[in-house]
View (tube, rainbow, N blue to C red):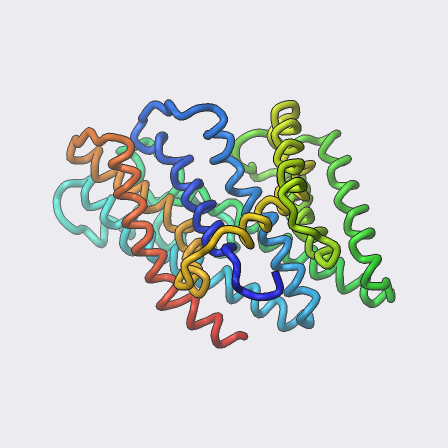
Length: 351
């Protein structure tokens, strides 16, 4: 894991695709006939993102000073998110409005809606969808947000801040490197204990303080699973018997405990499983060098929404898998444009 000759980019692309597939049925009111086990696997996409981030971001936090660390992290997550907001407000929602009113492009009518496109942009700047709608652009599919996946981003960035501060404080307290994992593990256990008393509810976070704290604790403990693995990586042995034991442990815990608690307890073995696969599974060099997974994640929901609106307006009944395939292709196009025109050039500048 000391070089880029692994499949982490490919796996993250799979995770982003799982998120798209997980949401696909609701957009066109299709019945989800997938096996329960496969649906559970799809729901593991977000925690898988978080454990991988825990591993990679901990490495970055230890290798960079705080200023450089936050500059790199901001550059990785925010510009693409902001442009996605622009694309949603200036293209996707405008197309939807035009189709819904059925009388051609009416820019004045579009910008005069409440909430307006400008409100959508301004209120959602803090990496959180405070204003998820633009006027009546979602009415035809009874939607309530233009990006239902973006709620995780503020928690992701919060994890960046938390791990950087924890490691900085521990370093300044002269905690030896070999003891960092022990302290972080204690923090991890403390968060799990908190979750035992205040379990994370189902669904997405609500705008009240206690609910946000509960979600933050849940996702940060998952994130720390990846951090712990990084801090002990010199001691990690990739062996098939440990992989099998990790899989068995995760299956048992996830079969017994509620989802939110299970992903916390399984965060460390989940990280091991993902890293094992990443050094075993061969990845195309193109994917190793180009990571469009973030673009797939942030564009999937808006693309799925717009395509569902087009189908609804024209009364087209579409097979769910054809719909999903079309969404994959269109999302991939936007994600690739985001990577090659925005994300990759910005990352080159800050490295």
